[in-house]
Image (tube, rainbow, N blue to C red; front, side, top):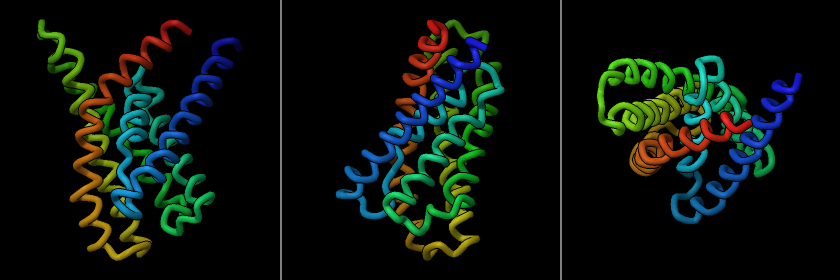
Length: 187
């Protein structure tokens, strides 16, 4: 029972952190990028949560990000992301894709003596693939529900958001994974 309480508390804190990051990104980045803001802090955190520990929590990070995105859309009345099939469903695949890539690269790089290749590279590449799955699935769901003109959305997301998210994920996911693993081991 004690371990369940710690897990629930940890996930609650992570959800709050993701929500605050998303809120900051929405208001700070919107001044520079307009309506579609990059998830340069939240997406790497969601991916890192999916990579921490065993394969069981691989959908947790994306689910928390999707729920935070949905709640924020309600609070700021964003008509696109109020639809849970756009805000939550695509985010479920982030962790699955990222964990799959991470698992394969970790196995492929296991014999390397280089710490970067053995530990950091699998996290960074998994972060990039998690970001790619987020962008592709979200754009697809927006197209399915005709939430916005696909050309405008595609141009904005690929030109600005995707580049910022890929760079942030490649850099921040390994850092977040290391920090989260230390927190989990202490708890």
